[in-house]
Image (tube, rainbow, N blue to C red; front, top):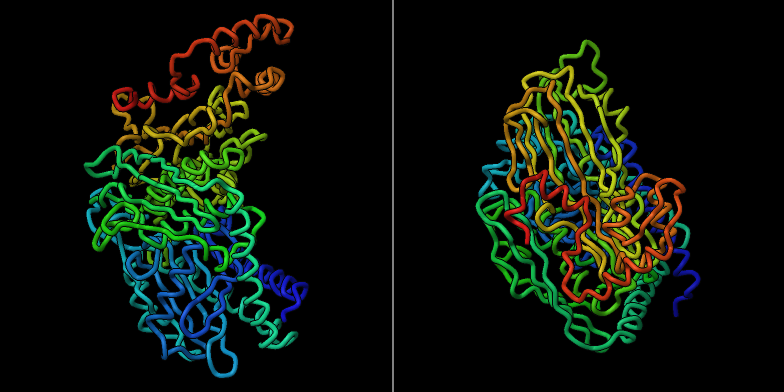
Length: 614
């Protein structure tokens, strides 16, 4: 019989090992999206010769959950042909990956002559080849238009570097030195994970370690089932929409039905729209990752591992947005429709446990630039073949996707499941790239109203001084269908970008992808709209509204319009009686509300989408 205390010691040891793999990737990659924004993940797995079982994970949760499918695909492909010293690479949506931009490294760890554990890492590369820098090709209509497809490969075999594969990959990438360093960072990090696992087995023995793993898996399963039994049996349906597929389709529906029956749960996506020729299809591993994200939010006290998912059945109809079939493109599916999948499930769960729901999706205002860095002094060489050429993925416009939750105002930037990441530092970015930020701040009246409000929208303005021959590749979502509110909370403000803002021919990126040359001396604007509120704004504590006014999150006009709170602009005090009368009048009005704040209304008008919203 396994000692639970010993099992917990081993579980925490492996959690730490996964975290060390993740931190090693972050600290050794030259890619700013990784070393600053931390767009990567890591996992430790057990392996019985058939199935890879997730034991511990670290980093961005969408990466580490999708890693499980990637690792399994690598093992299935090389079953019977794995050796000590092997290092495997994968980056293909239809071979266990989520999209071509996320590359996975898997290192098998041998004991007694066979692989018993795996150490794995995953990150988003700066370039994946293909017709468009950064891979979001606006003309993409099939996966071959996205970039280089990487089915399971052996970069190292029996400890020997396979030079022909490395050379082949680097010949198909714009930034071969950066991509090579990213892959080497993952391999090195996985070797760190291997060292930690060997230390663990040396300390406690292989038999005791594997017995502890069985206890860890069964414990998470048991605790998951115990929680499910406390919920009411039934079927709970919801849907959420994708603005556009960046091709010809609009208003794409994700349909989710959650079925609770005793200690079992089924999530059925029957009724979801068919796959599209555009960029937003979510490959099966990515869909499963987002479902796992929602479950981890709803069961915060249960350790997440393969046992966690035993009570869960997922139905993914083939040929739909949630389970596309080759050759449908998937390059933006890791965020869109991935995020909308999470929101559809979360909105269904709102009917069961409203006090636990909140935004579980990272949002998108995709912002890639390629050009020449003409500064006399350059701090980051992007291409050994052409030192002037640079590729800049500005993650700042993606930052605000957190929301309110029961009892808590929206905090931070990215939604909680992604909160290990961080926005890249603007000052460091200005050193690395030929750009200058003119504005980077929260927007007044943009926080989604609620009893607990969402976070404010983030607005950015920059000019790309020191650059030439610049080309922008922008895509934005969650403008027509912004991140939702919960339990009566209002929706977020929404995302959009403007290239050459204020000029007669400015290009608004919201309904459509924008891919064009631009004048680097002209302003690029972006708004990241933030997540929704929780609860009715008319129930918000008037003192909290006053505090937001004093903190310049909310204007006097916004306090009255969005919250029914009337504040004296001379004394900066709440007018208690007038506020009570105003709120009473509104609550007595039984007509449906639009559930929008004035910041959302400004966004609709500025982005020129009034024709798309009700």
